[in-house]
Each structure stands twice: as structure tokens, then as C-alpha cells.
Image (cartoon, helix red, strand yellow):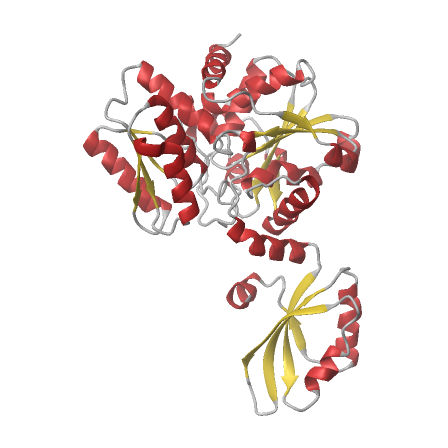
Length: 418
């Protein structure tokens, strides 16, 4: 048994003072849908609804055992790391300071304060994470508080690896030849789980799920070195990381870019809505990554096989639900946006409405501008019950001589108008 495996075992035992092992549940719906035996490792059911508590707890546990952390701890985060950090500070009765952007939703601020209680102070600074991170590092240097990183540290990786320690016990020998699907942001969870199972001699296979708008691991594996992305899509905020961590990449660099499934953000939204409506499971975008990546696996390769999807978190702000529903409908082809050149004459709107079918509904009608006295540009959103209805609509538009442009998939225009 390797030293890493032994350390993870001790970390897992220590964690039991905070919460029992998270459930590993066979999901009948996903199993029937894929033909595989799909298990969900429910990290959304920790006390802070994400796996991040594991790493923060282990980092603090080891620091305190080594005599460090007397001046308290500090972190920079507006998400799950902040909440795990706060919970751990309260558990150890140590002062902690959390730096968050001023733009952080109040719900996340309140939850962090709730988990940390009297032991936590939240400081809001700047509009972006980099400003918070810089402020946290400066505070650590000035005060002597110990900085707790979100993913790029051996003790954090060791803590996240306790997910794999539990998996090995829960499946009790059935992990051999199983496929483990892991979400990737900074890489701490993926690095810990793969290292533990490999060094334990368990013959599991791995596939990774990254947001298509933040493929830091895929790009780094392709280049053979860490690559910092010039920009990322922040929709999957729990995994939208511009650069994979140094320590995680060191453990993951033996994998191939082909092991990474890049998950489109709109498709991810469809999975979130599906799991909410059918299974009653509330997932944040990052928490749905592994489940969504099932769609990229060839059915013939996983039929009858054991597949474990790690559900990394369920801290979903329901104020985002309208946007998630919108993205899901657009991905499924059930909603489209058009710009029409609309004639300025009596009866024009009635003529347009007569082209719609019984399952078609106008969800938005907005004049953008009157480009001429006789015509105006109109943004029209149409939702339907079957994506095939749009082919019928287009044919009717063309036969009736309507001038229009479909802007649904034009990200630049859509981001400005929708």
C-alpha cells in the first residue's frame, strides 16, 4: 500500500467526525436509458452540498497537527470552496477570513456565514476573483493566517481522494473494470480519485468531463504542459477554471486528451432540468457534468458495465433557473429566436400569427427599431413542443415572403438581444 493511500485512509477516518460517507446510489432511470449499471456518488449530500469540504478539512487538520494555523486561515472563493472552508473553520474553532467579489450573490454570502458562524468573516472586494485572490494572499502575508487553496495543494488533493476511498468500500470489489466519470475544474478531485484507485491496484477506468467553455485539462494534455486559457465561459462556475492546478496536472498528465469529454453548456442545462424533473435531484452546473458526459459514451461500450458518475455539488441558486430552462430549450431545439423585417401595415401581425401551428407559441415580441417608414426589425421568440415544427415554420415563412434571420445559435447577437 502506497503512502498516499495510507494518508487518504487516515483522512477518510478523520472526516467521519464531520459527516458519514456520502451515498452511492444506483440510478434506475439512467441505467435503463444507457443500458449500463449507473451509480451516482452523491457529493451534493455532504453538509455543504459539495465535496469541497473534504479538501479544506484535510488541509486544516494537517496544518493544525503540525502546529500551524494559530493565526487563523484565509481563502478566496465565491463558491463551494468558501462554504467548505467555513464549515471546517467552525469545526476546528479557528478564525477564518473569506474574500469574495463584491458581485457575489447574497445567497452564497449568507450560506458561507451560516456554515462558519462566529468563526468566519466575509470580506467583499473587487469585481473579479483575481482581485480577491490577491487580497487574500496579501492578508495572509500581513497577518500570518494560512492560505487554504481550492485545489492546487497535496493536502487538498488527499482530502478529495477520500471520495475514492469510500467508493472502494461501497462497491466492495466491483470497481474492477468499472468506468469512473469525474468532473474537472481545477483538477483536485480528479487527481485525488484517480491516484487513490490506481495506487490501490484497483483496475478502474476513467473519463473526465469539462465544460466546453473552459477546457483547461484537455488543452493542457494536448500541449503536454499546463496551458492558461485566454478566456473562459463562466456559466459552469464551479468548474470554469482558466488553468488546471500544478499539482493536479502532475497526477493527471498521463491521461490522453481523448479521455476528456467537453460538455456543451446548453446541453448541460438540459441534463440539469431532466434530473430535477424526473429524479428530483437539484444539481449545480458543475455537479451535472459527469452525468451529462454519459451522452458522449458509445452505448455498445458501456452496455452492462458498471459506471460511477461523481455528482460534485448541488449548490444551485434558483434565481438562475429561468436561464437554465432557456438554455435547455434552445439545446433541445424547442425554442428559437428570429429577427424579422416586419411590414408596418394593418393586419401584418395577424398574417404572421396565422403561419404558426397549434403547438407553436410566441414567447417574445419586441421591436428593435424601425429601419424604414414601411418596415421594422422585430425580435421574435418562438417555443414549440416538437423541434420538427420549425422546419414547417421556415417553409411557411419562405412561401409567404417573410424576410428573417435565425439568431438562436449566433452567440454574439443572441448575447446582446436575448
